[in-house]
Length: 153
View 1 (cartoon, rainbow, N blue to C red):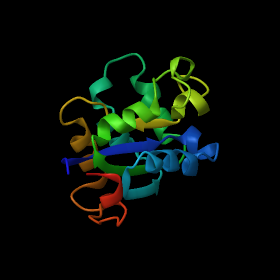
View 2 (cartoon, rainbow, N blue to C red; view 1 turned 135 degrees about the horizontal axis):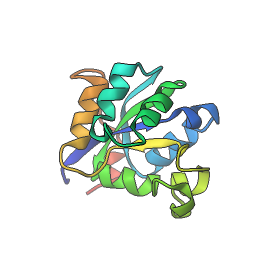
View 3 (cartoon, helix red, strand yellow; view 1 turned 120 degrees about the vertical axis):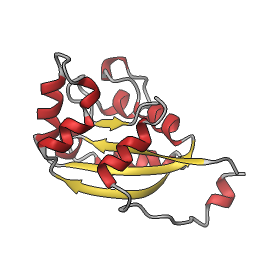
View 4 (tube, rainbow, N blue to C red; view 1 turned 90 degrees about the horizontal axis):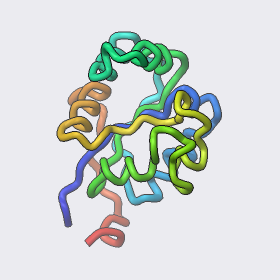
């Protein structure tokens, strides 16, 4: 079996408010990914600023930080072979108007500023950095699904 990786997702305040948490998590699980961590939380400023640090100084930075703090979010870690790429392709383009049908944003998104979900990008180390930032060294489970032997070689 190929090596697995872990990646972070955040169902943003609009996804929580619209009652789409189950739909979003379910779509990722149906792609064969395994949920290994999950939190429902209100994001504090320090965590928001650390999470979006790469965007500091850009015109949209303050809006990103304010928005992620504006209501509760659901933060999760998914595991699987090529998990980062699988989540990214499932989520779709940042702008829902340009996201492909069948993707989370393409089917459920309304506008770029309210695009339902954050997913770790494919830059080397991004997913590991984000998982560590949100869950530290703990908070994730290592567990086996009986079905894994049926869905992966």
